[in-house]
Amino acid sequence: MKKHALPVLACWLLIHQAVMAEDDSSPLKAKGQQVKLFVLTGQSNSLGTTADRKEPDITPGQDARDAQIPFFWANRSSRSGDGAAKLYDDSGGRIVTLRAQKGDGANPLFWGPEIGFARHLAANGMKDFLVIKASRGGGGNSYWMKGGRDDHMYHHVIETVQQAVKALPQGVTFEIAALLYIQGESDSPAEAAVSGERLRLFAENLRKDLPNATAMKVIIGGIASGGEKSDVVRAGQSALATNDPTFRYIDTLDLRGQRYDNLHFSKGAKLEIGRRMAGAWLKWSK
Image (cartoon, rainbow, N blue to C red; front, top):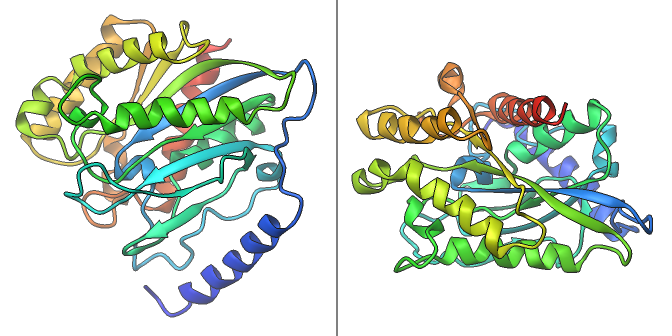
């Protein structure tokens, strides 16, 4: 990391800690308020790595709208090959305000498309929404497959949403509007071959197992990694949007040049992917 990146991060962390120490209650307060819930899950590009040594400011920057955007998260370890991946950072069971999250390993912070997504919705006048993040680093789609040998991420998403719903202020009602999904770079060849069908089943199961989720849409952030296996994942995921009107696919291949290690998206790309996912929702909601 460049020498001047550390002071920027240090200043950002001081501000972050000061905000946490102050009254940091949820912006959701109004009795009778109806809220749309957006649930983000996936692997490292959903988690949002920040190990780019060429980036002088790894933070998402500041936006005045962040303090008015409700956010709830529970992230799992970014370390590859660790199976169930320990829960290492969350919002303390509270709905707080939009922000980056605690990092792990080579990543001083984590923040992904949730930042650009929420800011873009707010900038376009959308109110009364909550972003819920339940991501991990690495891992094939089997982890999100209900009933599989190791389906810990399916249960993690369910539990995180349930906790967020429990944290809603009394008198606030909700519906789960959309699932935001970015996953596939770590799929094995066998997982890649069924990536589309498994995502369809994931959404189908969530609609049954989550409260007020029967009309949940799915916005897929396409992966940009190279190779035949990734092509298979993209084909499977994008076909869902072609065949099912409840799915939308966001192509990110034009952002390949904005990956700092041929896998993870840089700061600008992460913000852009979030904006594109928000744009898909705004078109849907017209």
